Image (cartoon, rainbow, N blue to C red; front, side, top):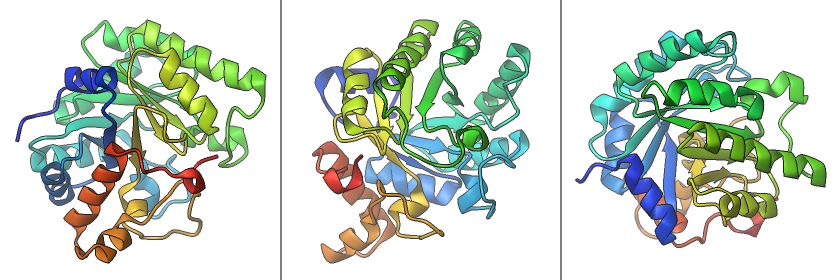
Length: 269
């Protein structure tokens, strides 16, 4: 299997090929995803909810993110690995951010992801100038759920939509090589992908972004208390096609993303 690099993801955007990303937290699933053709694995702090049973991502520690990143890296042979910087690991200072990011890179990450608008673009610039690739995350920010007042669609108002585009541009100017946008109107997801030269990966952001990401447990039909609108059960779909396996679900997801049949209108805002 040929290893996916950040340059490959950029070429995919330029050629119009969609990027398939799934969260992952251990070696066994990482191996299955790589075989299934998943382009990018995100070691997400979503593990706080789907693995640890917390009500949010906030309790996840840097040490836990390092541990899960090491596990994923040992199982992966193809996919590009991104790891989340957890809440509290980078907000206080740029030096804290560098320590946390470099720790995740040493654990096997090839890029780190930070949540926040243009106000933290300075952290993006600080890290990229020191050899740490950055994926910025805008829109709905799970680490800021207490400020946002819950999990809701972002950028509905014209002024807020324009600000999100400016947030994306600020991170790109600061050196970010990838952007994740979560839970926004489909029209805004498309506008971001058009406005930026770097790949824009959507989760609940419509089909016109440069790729899609889902939490692994969600796309395998492992339901929590609430199932977000943008989630689809790919294990059930794969089973309906004659392959009731985990790898079959991953392959079905990759195919749907590549063909732009997912997300459909019912999965978008």
